[in-house]
Image (cartoon, rainbow over all chains, first blue to last red):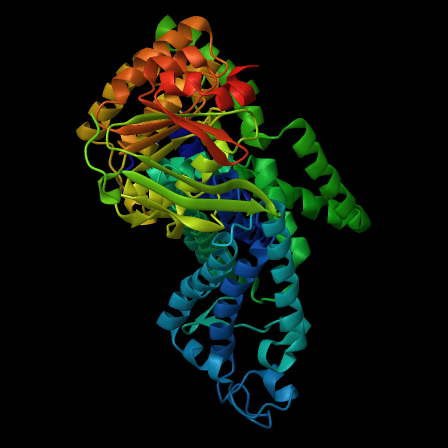
Length: 381
Length: 251
């Protein structure tokens, strides 16, 4: 994949560079490690939001269950870290040494079969990608082949999020229950709790985030991206142009799931635990709000939307914890009513034209970009 | 003019086709045959089942019983996209184009290559695609609007664009549902000219109410009434049929 003028147009390139400058330079230099780790935590949700841009913004498939895939990725990583933290020396006071502590508390005497592959780091990395991909493929195939879509699909994904939460909480001996999987220490022998490790992990995450941005941009620019847009408005016309609409929907849903899972795995690393409170209905809906605030057609907007909402959440819930949910609800209503294209839409309609006019006035008079130039990297419709 | 009387010589053979919606038979034991390079127009009063017949052929509606043979393939068993790939193209009554995409992109999506998920991920906009898109855009009078978003087009231009999207598919059987409805007089004349040009080398099945237009293009006319064939033959023959005059043309 070559980043050339065809891959990004002028304003997308500016958007890309601005985001890179912000995440690679400005934030690490200006924030202490505690705040930087907080940003890292927020950014794990940006992976989900980017996935939703492809799946919801482009494909028109609203999933209210992205927490499921975030959680699957996060739990895969947490299982590996937990096994590493549960070595025989570390757990010798348990009645069965060598298994995770919560299993011992729940009278399990041996490691369940589905935990065993997570002794291996390469298998864990594969599982982080493949488990959510497979799961989303099954859900997608079951729904889209039967032409279940729209609101029905959204409700079903929400139900799946609820089911998975209940399952995790109920099967405490296998999953750690409502506490989740905690007390994670090392990744392949490397202590992830130190400030230095958090600093490194932040950069690893930002690199991966840009990887996902490029992947999403690639999808957007292929014919598949245009078919997603086409499908969103005229599903029948796509079908009668010779395409299997279900397969394209499954692809978009799986891609969003894999992005979410990468975010979830990084969340476990950054925060040091994983629990069912990041899987259920409320976090899944919050993830959709990040995308809506950023602008559901904008890959860069998704990142800014995620950061902004999470900063607001932290600020508000530090001072008025009860008010946050109301604030979030109000924000969502405001975005839907007043700014259906979110931050990216505001940028595109109000800021970019002014910049273009300024540039046009300063340089050659003919330099002004046409109306469909893209704002802050926000893709034009 | 007519060659052969064996069913296999027909491009499309619809036999004993029936579809029932909750007991109401929208199409009832319908049989008709379309030959290679034939232009067949289906006329009939509202609710006669004309659009349903097209829906059945292209797979949008599943038949209750009966068979639709297209070049020996049984279409009732295929999915919509497989029917398209077998060579049947369908234009809808209301223009259905992709308004958030440009004219070029609309046409490109219909280009018959890279129709699988991974095919479309690796699809390249090469010279063959560009040439074909430009060629078709020329035919549908949109050569200079290639970069226009389809939502900026007029109603008539959207109809042409959809016809263009079908042309790129290059189907052996082209099905058009009221192609000139809602068009201005000048657009109508241009559309007739367009249709006359594109119907070469393929069979066409048209639903139309505009009798002048039907007379201009039809080789044969099928009159539907309450899901059954009322009359079939040349326009002259159909016009003189007293049953047709009574239920349809007399109004």
